[in-house]
Amino acid sequence: MPFNTFTFFLFFLLALGTYWSISSWWLKKTTLLVFSQVFYAAWNPPFVILLWFATFSNWLIARQINTTSSDILRKFWLICSISVSLGLLVFFKYGDFVLNNFSELAKYLGIYFRPAPFNMVLPIGISFYTFHALSYTIDIYRRYSVATASLQDFALYMSFFPQLVAGPIVRAGHFLPQLRDSKSFNKDQLGWGLVLFIFGLFQKSVLADAVFAPVVDQLYAEPSLVSAWDAWIGVLAFSGQIFCDFSGYSTCAIGLALCFGFNFPDNFRAPYGAVGFSDYWRRWHISLSTWLRDYLYIPLGGNRGGVLATSRALMLTMLIGGLWHGASWMFMLWGGLHGMYLLAEHLLKPVANRLGIFFSNEGVAVATFFVVTFTWIPFRAPDGGVALAVVKALFRPDFPAIPAYTLLCACVCSVGLVWWHIAQNQAHAGAWFIRMPRLLQALTLGLCMLGIFLVSGGEPRGFIYFQF
Image (cartoon, helix red, strand yellow):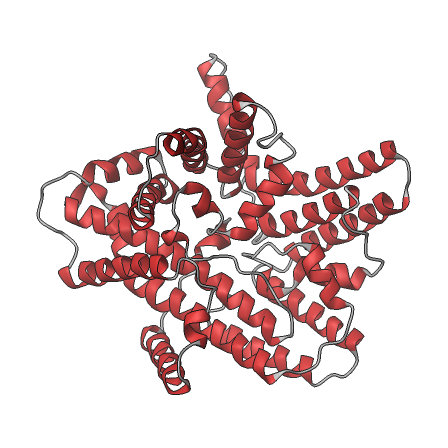
């Protein structure tokens, strides 16, 4: 039940009306929990059982970690939690990848092994609710928080429908305290939540799907038939598509949560205006990058050791972060490239500062954007052959094959997006809209809704991060 469908619109109105018509806080939470289960079951009902299993097992294990005083037992229960959560993720998401690569390795060694087809459907959102569960039990093990006694609260934390299938990855320490006290209806919160939802849908339906996607799809479908002009605009367009698609989803999720009285942290903050790669990862998919930092990079040693130890921790973190996006060597290549950029920046920045070499923020931001854009190629390409063909197309002096109007729209919107991110570099998300006069706010919202209406109809595109 994607956000950009009429079915979801009806679902949301029913959930919102039912929720705010109930006075009992326990019943309100129960209502949200039931609607969240229905929301998840709309994709594949049997997988609700998998979500229940992950929820109930981690709730029980967390309580055991919380109540026992033995360090050995606490570590044992933590290992159980990690094994359950990662075991489900590895089996469903990486089983086929592991099996195929094992078969290729055996073939290389002269052993011919043909495994039976794995044919396992990937449960939607499993990467996100797995990270929710892991951060919860790890924080309890570290004694950063205590386990909740309420199965209802923990189940709602795991399955709250706005962020269930594609984030943001909300920490238990941020969400569970919001379940302690009853929510009172606040028209300002509801209004701002609906504004964010409209902005998110506009990013997804108009910019990502109608403007950027046609150029991107044609480039990656037949990269050998396009010119350098087509290829460059297509590569730039994918930067726009993936940002508007995923940022659009996150904005919708934050807005929907606010309609029910819950505050979610920002997940994007003008990432294409970032000055350098460290700054980029402080702005892109913030909930994932901070999760990887706190639960992977720092435990691996972070920057506490020497250059080699820091390099190892950084590269492992980015490789695993790439693999989190999907069971493919292409995602690992994308993560590894970003790890190399971060490592080079970490090593060269102190040298540049000592030599008195400084660059303008705008110039570094543009350079960072182009490197990030080029690195999206292996992320988008289904295999190395297509990625290499796209790179070759960037230097092919043929005439454009993609219609000029489509190329022009994608080009103008890509440039406009980068300019906007650089201009909004230090601004809080949504600050530009709040500063507007009321009449201009109404006009902006009206134009966004008109754009959504004009591109509606037909089969809507799924959100890109649903596959992760």
